[in-house]
Length: 126
Image (cartoon, rainbow, N blue to C red; front, side, top):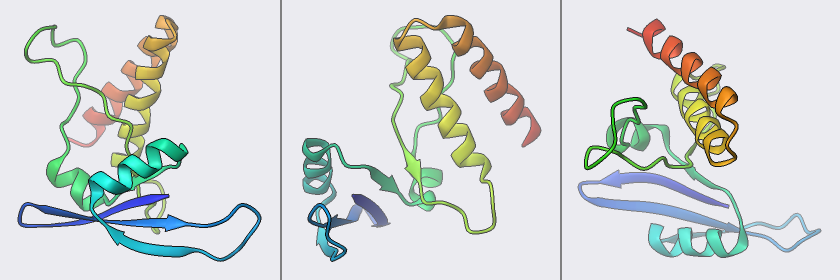
């Protein structure tokens, strides 16, 4: 797995965790995020992003705002889990991710239901 751990000024840092199937030994390497993401993508391994980075740097995705140059891509982001329980940012990203999957699979009723849940979640935080 990969963890994008922090940003210092304009430089991101990452850790790559490697293990052999069936073994408990894990090797942790400090690597450039671009290299770590490439390895994770090739191995179909999860990529985790520090919540602080997402809150500071992620693009907030809005649906129903029109198409064109203002459209932003949807990113598949997993946050480090919060030790104090459910996290509304992680819940929002999960809803966005699942909504994007539903649209790609042409499950438009599911996508609409997820969009409504996302709208309610965003309203409840403000």
